[in-house]
Every structure is written in structure tokens, then in C-alpha cells.
Length: 170
Image (cartoon, rainbow, N blue to C red; front, top):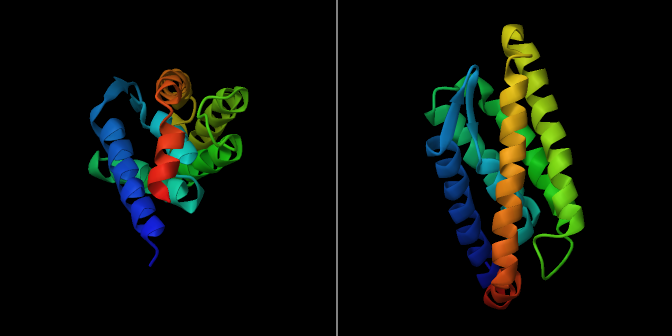
């Protein structure tokens, strides 16, 4: 196994854990569940780790939070929805030096649509009575994650994190 793969595995494990912690323990209760900001780390993970590694971290970190938090019924839907979010940001993060670009900032809107629409579909399958009740919380989550991503990505860009990690990952 290449040394680069070991480094990517370690970085992926770290992001999976951070996504889990931010989703599981930093949350705001709403009528139908809770709002969290783990999605912001998914967006960052896609730009920093990239590829299938980011998709895994997104799906595993968020689905594990559902399992641990008493929302096991949502874990399969969450894994799919969050994997799609990572894929969206893989497309947005083509810039080798920056996390925050006009495309990645705009991609937060697409991610919001996927989050709200994905959980609406999941709710229609799991329990129709939550489908409309969940929408405001999912919108707040999407907006909050977008703002947190923009702030964190800007700070990480100022620290030139992508170029520093590129040197380490070789």
C-alpha cells in the first residue's frame, strides 16, 4: 500500500469522526428532530481529501450519528443524501489551492436543495406526517452549514491549508 493511501485513510478517519461529533453533539432541537452543522465538514472534506474518501466520510459520519442518536430509521437515507452532498462538492472543488471559490459557495445552494428534497422524500417513505414539518429545520441546517463552510473555508484558505496538505500527502 502506498504511503499516500495511508495518509488519506487517516485524514478520512479524522473527517469521519469530526462529522460524527459535529452532527451528534453540536445540535439544535427542532420540532421533528434536530439541526446540526456536520454538513459544513462534508463540504470541507470533499475539498481537502477528495474522491471516494470524502464520500465515505460523509455517509459514514452522518449515518453513524443517526444510529447513535436514536434516528436509526433515517441512517440509510442519510448515508445516501450525505454521499450526494460530498459528490456535489467534489465537482465544486477543482481548484487546487482554494476551498472557497464562487463555485463552491454556490454549491451550498445545490446542497441545500439536496438536503431538503432528500429528507422530504425520506419522510414521505418513513412517516408522511413529518414530511412538511421537517422542511424548516432542514432549511435552517442547510443555511447554517453553508455559512459555517464559508467561514471555515475562508479561514483555511488564509492559512493555505490545501497547499500545505498537498506537500504532506506526497
